[in-house]
Length: 68
Image 1 (spheres, rainbow, N blue to C red):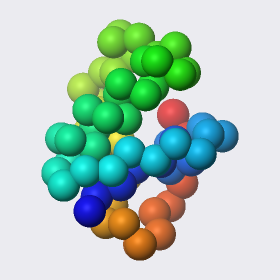
Image 2: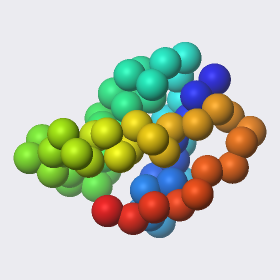
Image 3: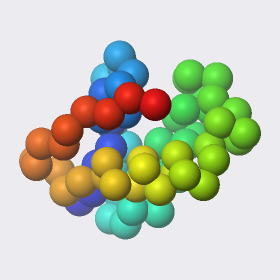
Image 4: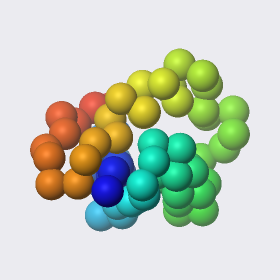
């Protein structure tokens, strides 16, 4: 199971997106970001999406925190 938490991207929030694929996790994280953190489509540049993808990791492994 792959995961990405808000904390992984430097946001003080306990949400964790989980999924079987990177795309599934990215979709769930994006939906959460729009709904809870008022993120807009224009906030997700191709460069940011690629950086976020590198932060998605297997559940149970520790990921280094990043900030955007």
